[in-house]
Every structure is written in structure tokens, then in C-alpha cells.
Image (cartoon, rainbow, N blue to C red; front, side, top):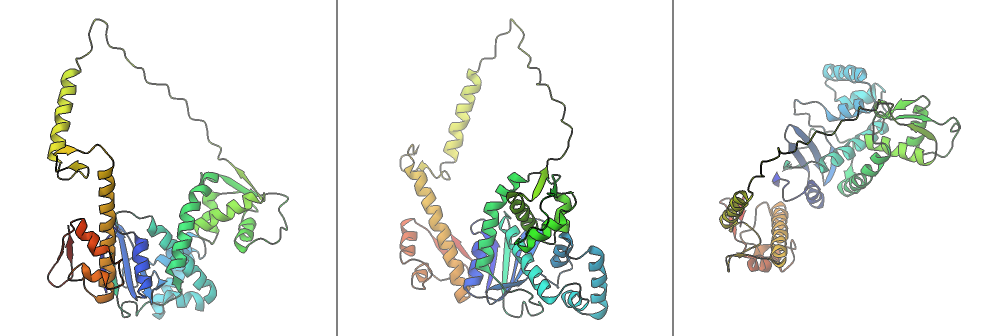
Amino acid sequence: MSLEGNLSSFGIADILQLIAVQQKSGMLSVTRQSSSMTLFFREGKIVSTRDRRRGAGDPLKDYLARYGIVSREEIARLTEISAQSKLDFTDVIVSEQVLSEDELKRHCRNHIQEAVYDVLGWEQCSYKFIAGPDVAAGVKPLADAGVEGLLMESMRRIDEFPLILKEFPDGEMSIKRRSDAHGVQDLPPAEKAMLDLLSIERTIDEIIPRAKISRFDTYEALKQLKEKNLIEVSQPDRATPAREEAPLVRKPPRGRGGRNPLPVLAAGLAFAACALWGARDVLPFFDRSTGALATGGATIRSARERNRIEEEIRWCLEVYRAKHGAYPDDLSLLDGDSVARESLSRRAKEWSFRYYLTPGRERYILL
């Protein structure tokens, strides 16, 4: 199976769920301008983000360094050992006892979670999924992350992170442990480690690369400590900017009448009429039978319904191709394949959709 396209019709969450439901193994590449991300799957679960065939940097190394889990100097040393010994970097980091195997697996899973969370926010992306167990043959699985759990946690972060940022809107805010917060018991590990880190006053920008957890987890731990009244938060001390005076509005000279607006208004109306007439074939609310604009909301709702059905058809076509290796010869085949509701092909006819299959059944045209 091979999936390829852009995310204008389907979100990355839909693609991830499709791969998970089909329990496919392979590689999913998501590209946005100069940025790209690679996810490797085994039987529908994400096992790695490390594409060793690329010349680009290792995303796991960047994650470990970015959050202070392993220093950049130590990563450079381990990378040199890996190159000389021909061992994978993850094998070296365990053999050199920088991280235990359990610690490495936990950080790898957290890195996958952050990668999925990040890519869900990408827009105007393209994707390509290449299926087959051989595609991920050279990838060492250090995590076994189910897509459903990753998506649920990502959605939670998407909902909660903006609220947390309202409490900590500035990276230069200073935070320190309260003097009466020593010896507090029954704190989760992340909060306890954060409280120890705040034995001296630090800004948020200084905390993140030392916290040894992801950026979201850092902010969440700070929020919990603030609610428990265990930390003190100070706003950055900045000089108040000088007040800008409002620009002087010049009055027109006396004795000169204002310009006559009628010619401009007439030209605008003429332009709008021409534009509407030229766009009558593409406006969703243009009534072709009467040659006039529809004034009610029924036509607009109909256009939205047609768009929704089109998205459903396209999604079912991708699912069908994933199961059978090619697109169907006719939309009616979707109904009997347990892919779509029985009425999908009928509704496609009602809305005058036209489906054309290219030679080789590798592409289709839906009008």
C-alpha cells in the first residue's frame, strides 16, 4: 500500500488512524516547506522517528539535547563512538551508561508523543506513506506507541496548552521555590524534580533546557506547583515604553468642497456586477436556473453538504485503496466493501459527482 497527497482534505490524524486501523508497517513522511518529519510503523504502532538513511540530523539527539537530558558535548562524544564502532547511537548511549535502557525507551516514547503533537499543528503539508515490513527493517524500535493514545494526549495538549500559557505568557518570567516548600511529600516525579530545580530563581527560558522533560510537561508541572502554592512567580522587570502620541489628523482646507463620491460609487457597483457575472459558475450560492443570486441560506448549506459528502467519498476511496491496493472501478464498490454507508454511492449520484479512474487504477478524478 502507498498513500500520497496533501492535507487539504484529510488531516494528519486521519492518515495516522488509517495506518493504525489497517495495522500497516512502513514509513510515513510529512513535509511542510523546509521542515519534514518521519514516523516508522510496525503493525500499526509508531516505533521510531529516526530515519538513518537521511543525511539530516537525528531528531532523537536533538530532543535529548534540547531538554537537557543529555548534554550536547556528551552527544558529540557518543556520536563519535558510534561512528568508530559502527554501533547505533542508542546502543552506545546505553553501553556508556549515560541512560539506562528503560530511561531511553521512556524518552523515545515521549519524543514520539511530542512529534505527533507538533505535526498535528502543521498546515499545508504533503504526506507519503510507503508500506511494507522491509521499509522499517533497519529501524531499531525503542518504543511501541499506539496511535489512539498518542492522538488523545495530543488533543489534550492542544486544548490545555493555550490556557497554561495564559498563566505563564512570558519566557522571561522568574520562578523560584517558596521558602516554606521544603520537604513537601507526595509530589509526582516531574513536579518534585521541578521543585528541586527551582531551589534558585530561574526564568522559564532557563528552566526548559534543564527540566529533562518536554516543553509542555515543563509548563504543566509549573502550573501544578503554582496551584499548590509551592512556587513564586515574578513578572519580568522591563522599562515602560514611552507613550506614543496619536498621529495628527489634518483637516481639509476651508473653502474646498469634498470630492463627489458618486463616480467612485458607480464604478464600484459596476465592478461588483461584472465580477459576480463572471464568477457565476464558481459561486456556491449562484442560482443557475434563474441567473440570480440566492438570497436565502439553503443554497449555502447545500454547498457545505456537498463538500462534506465529497470529503467522505475521498476518504473512503483511500481506505478502499489501502485494503485492495488500487482504487475501485466504480463508486458503487464502496458500498459492498464495508467501507462506506450503503447510501454513499446513491448520494454521490444525487449530487451529480463524476468519478473517473486513470489507467493503472493509481489515480482518480472526482468532479
